[in-house]
Length: 333
Image (tube, rainbow, N blue to C red; front, side, top):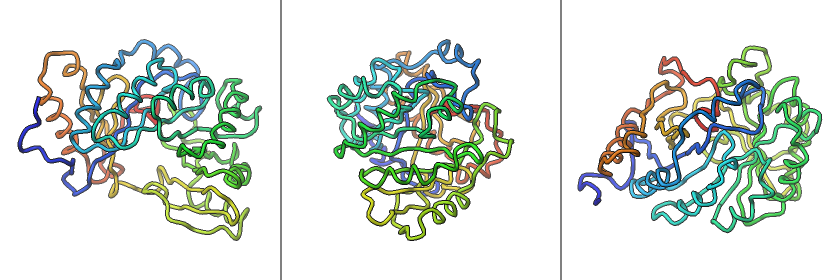
């Protein structure tokens, strides 16, 4: 179907923000049970949820490309649990208007599946890894998968053709002593190590236990370990960005909770169950499944996406909404 004549080539919300980035969670299932995300007994919940199939995701991406979305990131849960992930990457890469297709993964299955992802055209990978110690990895994730993840890390460090980021969620008294070791990963590889704050979506496990470590404390620890570190310009969410002299890569600090990025927010999210979310901190979402499963014209999907953009709040943290999300696996990392 042709696009409506009054449709703008770019999605711009009520506050003048251009929306060009979509994060698509393709599964809520995960093969780890990180203490800041999922409870151990949550294993069967995600498997019972209906999730979008490849054709439905492809339909959405096709519309998004024509509406001004330029960046697609596949998330989860753990997206590598989807056997059709390479197909989804290829669909996105072949979609007019889409300029980059990236993936966030915990790395457990990455070594095995990386060749098919590269063939499909993946542009970048964010590896979520919170410790470089095997015993500590088991304590944080409740799984003995460290050797596989460490091997994936070593492979990614040798892949200059991909944009590689290492996401490290820091918790006080848990892994904050590893800041220097993670920073050293940038010495010989053109990767970005990103130290991140905890979000309040930990399935009510540790948010109020005093483990939260704010961006300012992270910055102080980093400067203490590397007094000659140089500030550089980072991406929108990378409020603090640095490079250690002599290192090829860079370091960033993501104040995921303590600092509000709403004024520059350019993203929407779609959950694995097909719910379109305009703001991470809002209860409100739009169920796309009736549109995707029915005989609705494509224009209905277009108008629904426009509606979500119109509903995007100016400031999610100050919207007063009682967010119903308890785990990031529900909404995508």
